[in-house]
Image (cartoon, rainbow, N blue to C red; front, side, top):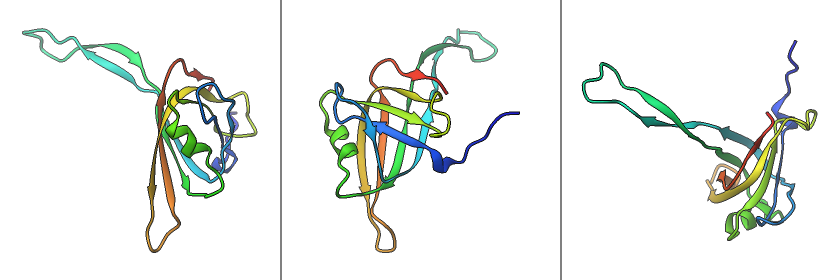
Length: 133
């Protein structure tokens, strides 16, 4: 029977530069990973239905959380001219299961009168991503 894990045990490591070592990032509460593959349209004139071949795989996703004035790791990663290194673990209780590698990170901040100041970080692969999920 498969072991299932609670999301509360997820952890994310990110470096502040492409050559840096990833460190544990705080103030995050959610992540997404999208490992879609592009479709290349190969439909010919006179075809009775659309056809395609598989293109390149892509890895991207998001991290969401809260703005913490003392944790600048993600903000620095989003401003790095050579990207960053990331490692995403769905559970600290299964450390052999992860996705990681070089990435680009973009940052956005949101605030509302009735909520905590929040952050969203969009990431996308910047090289070979290791997928051990």
